[in-house]
Length: 208
Image (cartoon, helix red, strand yellow):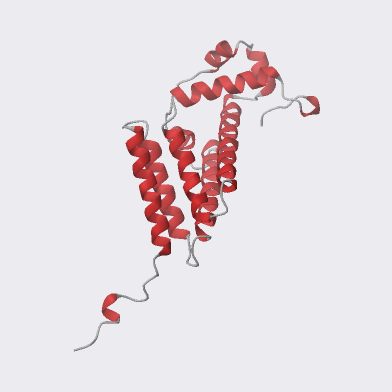
């Protein structure tokens, strides 16, 4: 676990280390970046780094924790933006497309980390799974407020669309990818308003 200073005050050196690591990890990947590079760009000593972070893995976990908090803040702002559950879902989707169209976008920090730490038992992989479970639960709960029907499938559908957009957004035209994602989200919301069919069409058809 990362080490905090006495009294809970986060030092300027720790903040600089984490911000530097965040910038480099997100832009270039995790395994390709060594501690010496981070120390040099943060302009601190190795001793200072290890005073705040027990290991590189600890620094990566802090990087992901910071990304998690940023996304939670975006979702909270989206939820506060409108009393309408459907509009809250749209606001969450728009916050995602804002990121896709931002300068320096390199995909999802969590999907990128999972690709580098594929062992399901690894603490970093576990951190990714915990974040994704929170996001799935949050989106599903929002969608559940748009209809009386179960929102489990709709929540999974939203996450799959989001994952695809985050992956494609740094490879193709981000505006086109964003528009496609938002169109898909509208499809999910529209499907929530369509009465659910009971049985199948042939079950209610007149018998000859």
